[in-house]
Amino acid sequence: MQRSQLVDAYPATSQVRARAFDHWIAARLQKMIEPAAVRVELWDGSSPYSGTRAPIGSVLVHDRGALIGLLLDPDLRFGEAYMSGRLEIRGDLATVVEALTRITLGAPSWRERLRGTLDRPNSLRSARRNVHHHYDLGNAFYQQWLDADLVYTCAYFERLDMTLEAAQQAKFDLVCRKLRLQPGESVVEAGCGWGTLALHMVRHYGVRVKAFNISREQLSYARERARREGLADRVEFIDDDYRNVTGDCDAFVSVGMLEHVGKAHYSSLAEVLRRVVRRSAGRGLLHFIGRDSARPLNAWTKRRIFPGGYAPTLAEVASDVITPAGMSIVDVENLRPHYARTIAHWRERFKNVEEKVSEQYGEDFRRAWELYLAGSQASFSTGWMQLFQIVFVPLETAPPYWTRAEMYERPPCAVATR
Image 1 (cartoon, rainbow, N blue to C red):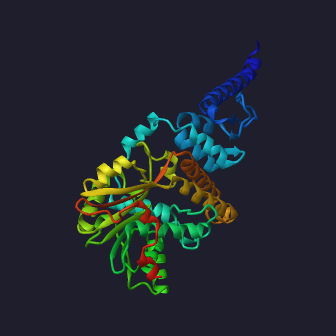
Image 2 (image 1 turned 120 degrees about the vertical axis):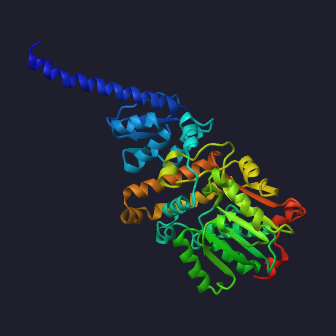
Image 3 (image 1 turned 60 degrees about the vertical axis):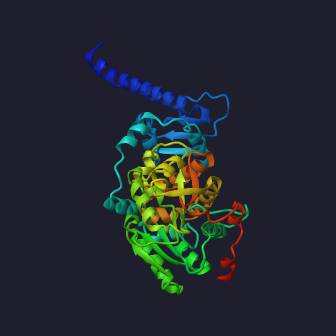
């Protein structure tokens, strides 16, 4: 063979080897997700899928770098590739993501365990930075797809035909009934969001509330709403971390904050509960995203959506928060299906404003939130995540109700103060 022919042959040989390498990786990936009946497809249209049933959808990978990333670190690189458009889903996104989620329900991978050991504690500075990353995107962003009251936590669907707005109000009433709030009592709320629960407790249950938050966007909105609705004299929205709560209260409530505390600071939360909840007739409620077994948050979600987040198990909360606080758990409820339904509503609303979100924040941002919402719905639909509500009281205090039936009946004070 002449020298010119050898030179011409090298590129062709390299291309053949590269294609063989691509197909080898694709085959490895296909074997990993075969039980989900999801097809891996390469940019040239080829696929190693040979499942016995028709695929429910396809993961279309657009380049070799994204393909290698999926093999080396799927927890992180799947989201990164989808966000940047280097990976697409053919078929219904929620259906495909749920199927992929179901095949990850086993023990944590070595990557997850390693990341768990590398987690850094949420200091006061990092906690504020993490909250700013997620909640200070601008109230206008959340107003586009949440309900009118800007409630960004699990709703409670007493009936399947309830609207999202009605289900969120039902959640507030459920929380208040579990706490057996009485007119004139004092309440501390840690992590108050846009202030809707605090205002609901004041308006409908006649209590006084101190609500703590470190999201300035949310606090500004909550304070203005309290002033506008004539409730500012009974609710105080405080720009401070939960660790700095002072004074005492009849009831302590936290809805959607525990996920941001981090395992390293559970002792800090325990100390707050011990210091704040009155020993005589005091009680509290924690509403939080949790897990059946300990594992870190998904790597991509933690990087792009919830930095510093951790979803604890019931055992971790009981042993590291409630017991050190000198408290006793008197009720536990899992609202997991309600959160899947809540997020389904959010996803429908988000779809209606996708073009606007893309124009305002960029296509990468839109795709990230599209995937985050679909993945979150899948997590609660499959049981990968749980939504716990626990009620607790000081050890020497009687539970606030005799039977669980009382939680679902409106107390007289709630009717009288409406």
